[in-house]
Length: 332
Ligand SMILES: CC(C)(COP(=O)(O)OP(=O)(O)OC[C@H]1O[C@@H](n2cnc3c(N)ncnc32)[C@H](O)[C@@H]1OP(=O)(O)O)[C@@H](O)C(=O)NCCC(=O)NCCS
Image (cartoon, rainbow, N blue to C red; front, side, top):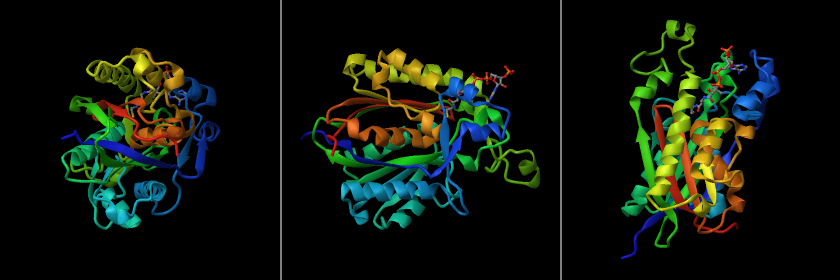
């Protein structure tokens, strides 16, 4: 019997309308456009404004567009995985809220917390359900409303992050396409360098935690940078080595959009030219779990069936990983 693989059969992104430019950030904190662009590559990012607008809004908009473009009835969806660190609420899962918003009444689902690597973890999880035969149509969302946990008085973090995300549809295939291999890693000793101090069970919200600004993302940028630059490049090289792939075999590198300098280092390590590297950090900043599906969405019209694509990410946890996939369809 032919091996069943999980293929991405559609991708859709969503970013909110509001554009937060470097120039506007200059009016909020002591920073400047030149520093932000040269240190990160970011020019602007999107912000989800308005009352009661959670990550589910981003996820649901992406999923609605995905169902429409792939001609999929929401009732056919078996499972929804939502990778996010900014769920609407600690519970219920944002995946459940999205399922309700899009009418996916026959699906089950859950959230997955792996920060910037969340979409890769979600892809591997969704693919396992497809490969085992337990599910036929799985949606994997990577989405974050980072503005809900960013301290806009902290210049070291507020310039980096933005809101947005995307979703892919996974379906079984017997062809030589789809998710071919993944290497996923984590190291909890990295927690002190990138985390949110309060609001969890260890330190529930109190007036003191709010006053101490402990409900915002905390990052020791240069330490995270050091780990990100080595680990993301190493794991991308590892997945290529173990599948006998060279830079010449790769059509596209899809790197997590955290910092242009980390992206460049990964591309160099893989021996992949700039023209093969998906890049949209300049427009969206770091949308955490959202960056990889947003890249695939932006570049979808350039992807051809059989293209070898390496996705690579690094994030809080620490978590990191790389996935080799063969694109499953030509531009429509
Ligand atoms: C956050 C980050 C952009 C900072 O860049 P950096 O080159 O490491 O900068 P440093 O933190 O060493 O700071 C250098 C100087 O710039 C200053 N600086 C920091 N943020 C600034 C800003 N927004 N504007 C102007 N100056 C700033 C610092 O205060 C420091 O000044 P000092 O030398 O006088 O102390 C970078 O560390 C980074 O991208 N880290 C990883 C992000 C990441 O991958 N996140 C995880 C995955 S989600």
